[in-house]
Image 1 (cartoon, rainbow, N blue to C red):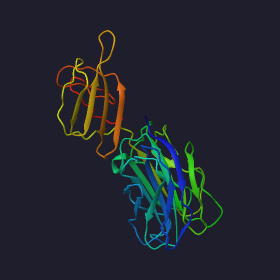
Image 2: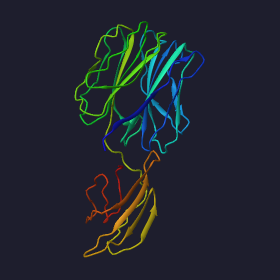
Image 3: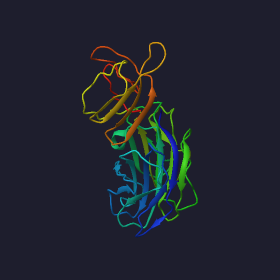
Image 4: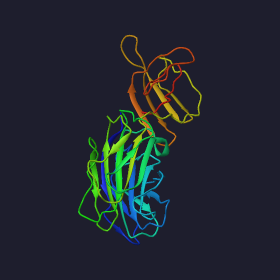
Amino acid sequence: MAATYRASAISGNATSGTEPTVVLTPVVGDIFIVTCAAKGNTNASPTCSDNNGGTYYLLPTATYRTSLDTFSVFVRNQKLINVNSTTITVTIGAHTQAEVAVVAVAGMSLVGSGSVRQSAKTDNNTTTPTATFGAVALTANFTLAAIGYDLSAATLATPPTNWTERQEAGQTTGASVEVATRDSGFTGTVVTWGAALNEANAAYILELDGTLSSIGYSGSFDAITSSQEGVQKNEGTWKGSSFAGSGINPQPRYFLTCADTANVRHNWVDYTPFFVTGSAPVIAPQTYLTGTFAILVAA
């Protein structure tokens, strides 16, 4: 499953003395990307957290007018494991205004800093926002383009061509955010917004790594043969059971559950196993290996 945009939300203007917050309801497996524009911000390294057990990785902070007008991007360090309404809070320094937009991305295996294949920013643009990746983006990967900007007139941003604008809030007092995403198809390096903004702005682009992560497994490999029934193994971070099939030359069926390195549980139910021989089977995503019963790659 490739990473895709699922939902988004925006905070509304948080005035001086108020930390900006966003409420978003996840689905299991989401990761959140958070963007925050803060005017007059005295904290160059803001932090982000939520009330659903989330911590966040901060990418390098950009500036859009002066060194105190900051635009920050965060990626959640854990997948969401429930559907509880979640309040995300960005803790910044003393500020005059702030605006936050959150995007929920489905279908990711990696999280936090490990989920970012590459990012790029441009500080203190004064015309059309633009930013350039250091390498060509992979066509199957999810990409995000966002700006923080100083809006002194009623001019909102135009998203890059082929990107879909998800959220925008233009504050004439100076803390404005626009976020656009693209599920796949971008294979370039330069992302340019669709029109001149003519306001001070910082552009940020992000490519998520759509590859699969390794399961944290500390146990040994134990053979489970087709003749065994009701065999259960609990060791390390996985649990497996085999049940005899039916008919001619029956094959067992398996239930497997295991926790990955971010302590997110993955479940596979009722899959036909792939039989292998020898000590070095070919590992593939979502493949059951009965000769050396294990799953080493997360779905």
